Image (cartoon, rainbow, N blue to C red; front, side, top):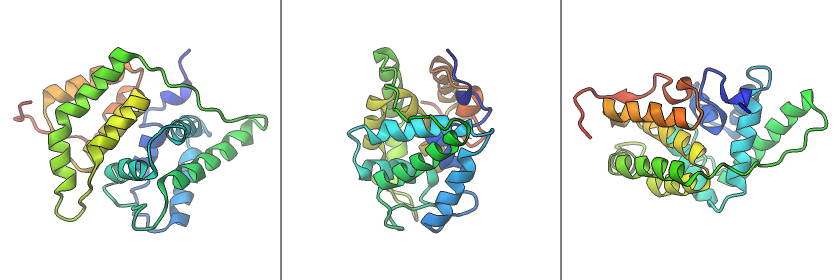
Length: 219
């Protein structure tokens, strides 16, 4: 059955929070939690469901706190810098998850949070992993060698995320590309739209007008 909180007309879940927490600049954990609370409340609380699911998937995964921090920093372009603020990645996700739990329980006091097992379609996982490998060199160049917001380890962290949950891994890949404004070709853009459709994501999740599409670029 289609989950209504996956079709909100905007980016969803953790990738959606990463998008919105950048504006305005967030310079303290308290402000970051306030933003997370506001985002979880969007669409009459519907946003909280996918956000909670994404957090629980990563919290129950083998990804380290550093891996989680790297994925977060890639999408936010280090504008809400967990490392600079000395916020452990897993601790941060747990606090966001608690916010989501509280918001959902306002409507459903009996709600008990559980992480639904991601749908691990091997063909889909390989399709997303292939996109990470394909754009990996350009993403590595854009992140690790950035002039004033360098970030190491983005591609390996994404590979781990895809292995855990291709849907979430794909959304985090897109956020990293958008966060560091990595140029992509029109052909790649079309592939992303098609892959998003296969994953059951709305077009607005894939293309929220943040891509750096370069018409002359050839894959």
